Image (tube, rainbow, N blue to C red; front, side, top):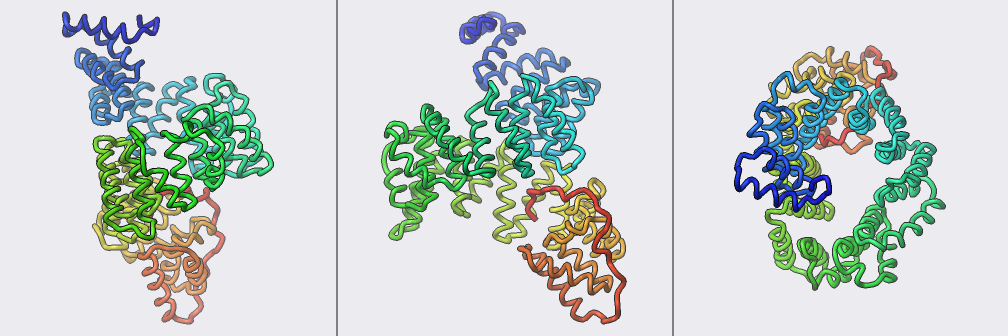
Length: 544
């Protein structure tokens, strides 16, 4: 029955067997596979029963871990992997599952390490090669990203991986502004047999950047295609909202039948369009009646936002509506996540903070929530709360040097856990000495320890263009002033002053300026403005 894809019948038969033989391994296996094919979370339960009966079988534990990851049960996955014996942890399959667990935990460095280990164990496995390349194409290490492009280019000629490889290559080319390569990948992607509607959106994203003459005809061609399917229509409208085309949505919906736009998911993106163009009265009318089913919380949330923006609204009206929206997401993490994104977008800071704090308790969503909280606290300059969030980020991803450096630098700046901050600064530098964020943080640590000359030697090894980043320039200026290199320090003080630096960095910059003002006029040793070039600064999404 499983081979005939009669999953429900197979499950019914297997359940009957379990009623008679409660420890039937074959019946457990049928139920695990049948529920898995039906995308039911129940598969985790059956995989647990199999793993219980076969505690030393690594495949049973890996299957359990994979099923648990699929449904966000990270603790179950972690325990299953912990039960696998040390010799079996050298298998490629173990590294793959461990890599996906690391990703779910927000530990991207460990994910890469595990995927690389899987490729090392089975270098001829194209799936493992694809997983690693799709990850490393985003690497700030030029050697890794170049190798990843080569791997994905090869896999783009293999039917099974063609579409996924082209997607990754297109995104990468657009990010690097390699428009000729992006044009080539976009054309190949559109001709692929496995092309999806999401791929058309990728191409729209590219052509909007490349050429308005190519973008417009493609958008006009995609619109009627999208209108055939509610999810595609919502996806296109969502893309338009995010790309400054909300006004066009308002005009477009006037030509669409009412039944195509009045229900989710399309009604949600229409509400988003009204919000984007600040048409609060239309938004309020749009969300006033009816029901949006499982996404009712979004109707209430948009109504609350429209009410907040209305001239004659009271805070009580907004609070009542927003509270109703929050209550509608109880026990629904995906709803809380959508609501948190909406609150963040419309700068509802108290509401977004509480939602992200709640979401951070959910392991699969923890990293996204902590990143959002870090951005919020950085914007509000709440350094105490920011430090706590960075600590949690470091605990969840201890092998990620930029996070370690961010935590160390903030700790040194605000005098929080100074000894630990010094150790973390050295740890981050030892891991990635060429990463500017890590190197500058450790140099600053040495300055605070009275070892300014050592810190300056670290600075001298870094590329000059990266040192002129306003955040880095603050610390460079401080070390140069301390070493009586006044003329060189002025250049970096100017660079720091031209940027939007953090509050604690402004205090350091003022410290550097004050020292410079009273510095001796004696000529200082020269500081090379063109040190040996190293790899470019890794793009960091970290906050401090």
